[in-house]
Length: 108
Image (cartoon, rainbow, N blue to C red; front, side):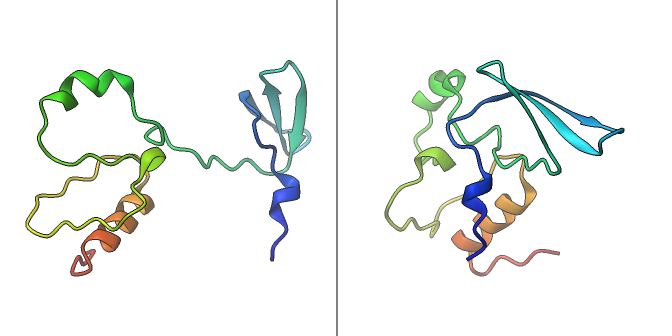
């Protein structure tokens, strides 16, 4: 085990981050008004992790299956006989999704 959990702040919202050239650290502003510094900044959440409510109107007229990372089904899904589109900003996640759903997928 790496033991990284002791270095992660959960249920905490960062409202700003700026790299300091003098200290070579990241300075963070938190939603509760406090600040902290860190050697590393890991941006591990994507803009597509939560389903945008602005899509509700468009999704009502769509007859296919729609999956979001924040609400992924707890059962196997099959792309057999379906057209599959992956929309997102994280290329690694997109490739992982394609490889998981389509074992025959080959990246070029």
